Length: 138
Image (tube, rainbow, N blue to C red):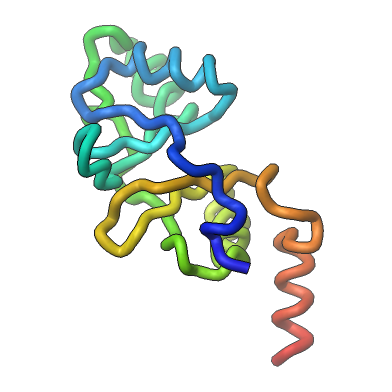
């Protein structure tokens, strides 16, 4: 099964110049712990991700003003992402290996086209079952 078959299409995102306060309100409204950051509304090239951890450590922990701090200044730049034609097991293994709950999905131009969360994958694709299957094949 490919990532494009289980991903949520057109996920919410924020822009680098958005305030962290705006992004946090999006996260609250959408009930998510992270939001992808893209270059602009048209190209939507993935350049980062803003996580609840970023908010806790870089905003609260450093006593920054969320409404005066741009997303670009505190986002995580090393984004774990998958391509739309990757096998969904790649996304599940990435979540397990990097201890993340959501993986952005991009096309070959790097454009954000979807996102996969733990809730999007079936129990048969849990990290434990994938590891078990891979170890049996070896």
